[in-house]
Image (cartoon, rainbow, N blue to C red; front, side):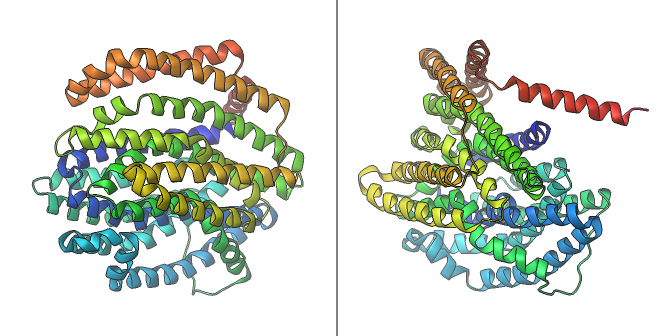
Length: 522
């Protein structure tokens, strides 16, 4: 499990670094102006589908079915299931893409109702959203191939594919950077082109895995119906985080101009640990739990879940505290350049701290969800998801007037805490989750080590942050990076000193790797 988590995490980290490069360029060229707001809203719908299907509902429904078919009936039957699902998806998603293009003005009234007060921004958002619509089909088909590769225990290509999204968008900005409107249009076209590139890469990886797919005539076979039945409710259960972000965007469009961009930049930084840790653990854990449950190993599944939780806490607690303490220098170093001024970057810093409060809950929800999905239960997470989304909406409406732009991230964090807590409680009641003394003790030690790190950063930040705010972009990023490195050192040494880390998991992973190398050697 550790090797697979590391594989997904490393590639995801590389993609996030490229994503930061992309966002720094967007901030410098578009700032928080109308073109940036329009593009970020145009990006919300395909991103929602990408995260729901790539990291959530589709994986929750398809990967257990694919893994079970592979284990019980062999590769040919697993291939047939993937082909049947793919052919139905092509028809359905092509229909959705066409509907999206034709009725995009109506969609825009739902996605960003506040844009209606600015006809120019509204028209640009509609135009950009139409250009990104084909990405829906491309990325969902990519999700199917990624799920099949994960089911085959081939995680690298699926984790590396999202890098192409950032590479293509960076190239678009490099070619069309002279005019904000042309830049935003180039970005929208780049989104769709990146979907084509990702699909091509994953199709090649499937061919190399000996499971190239064809598209038979679409039919609702029993396997397809089973996947669809699980996927429907799983959209809310696995994608509650993304639905909450969508609610934030709707509320942000009703707030003063630039709020959509302010929250986008903050969420992008928050997504670095969330995507790297949460997606890595969730992606690697679901196939493992599915196999263990298929073989009737409930005790092993509970032990795997406990280890995944301990691993998540060891990474997310220090990340959350570091983002809260260093929000201001991080956002100023990354985004206070070009068209984005210091005031807007400062607002993004406050929003980042609010998002970071819910970071551990966001990641734990991604860890708990596979505990339901591996057992074929998508209904329980959907009930919790519905309540969490309703709570987020209610808090957004209550906080938008007194707190302004700070309301959406706080509402999202509070709803994430509820979501993770409810999932944990219901798993425990069903006897699928038994937090033992080792997990509780390790969690407390991780919290103590992270607290010492936060205290060190509080003392050091005033010495570094002012200089970083006045430095050139590269110098500012270097100074903040040095501060983060010191924090990591304090946390790592402190954690080792008090036994906060599960070193047995690391030793087992290294031993398994040595065995695999020995088996491959002549």
